[in-house]
Image (cartoon, rainbow, N blue to C red):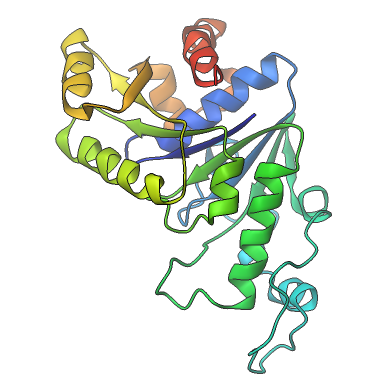
Length: 254
């Protein structure tokens, strides 16, 4: 199962990814998080502070140039558009208490100089992860999906837009849905985060209009402390993890 999480900055997208991964880990399911958000915050929620023990893939210039067939510090008018990437996940991922993490780094968007060896390599790697891997893959994306190629988007079982009960995050969700149509994303849903009162659910439903809302994550001090990096996901109580079980089941009912 491949789930791609997106949403406006600050809505708790990365927290939702890590909560999902922890639930799957407790169910003894292999889970692989791909951090493709330029902020790269998944490692922080998994217990790392400061510099991570491995560089983002996007910064491994020597590896990228080798695989795409270009020479460093030289112009690259020609390079491999489909370089070998099948060995990258095992070689360059971190295993954090049973959750694997691959830090992708930034994929440049269209119009931003994207025809380059680095982007070719990263997009090939992302496509491989979303299409060829057997385990659960959770993709933590930046807001918007312009940096996804059509082949990668087709490999996503569900695009999950994380929203909170305010107008700006809901407007971002509507824009993401419009972008997703161009890539052929068919299974797109939203989940509401940081829910305190029932009228906030009604607010989300009213403003998202034709985007399916598949569930909600209630506000809690435990989840807040996770998002602040004060506790690790495996320290969360069974009650908190159990409370999102139904939500994860609805996400995976494709």
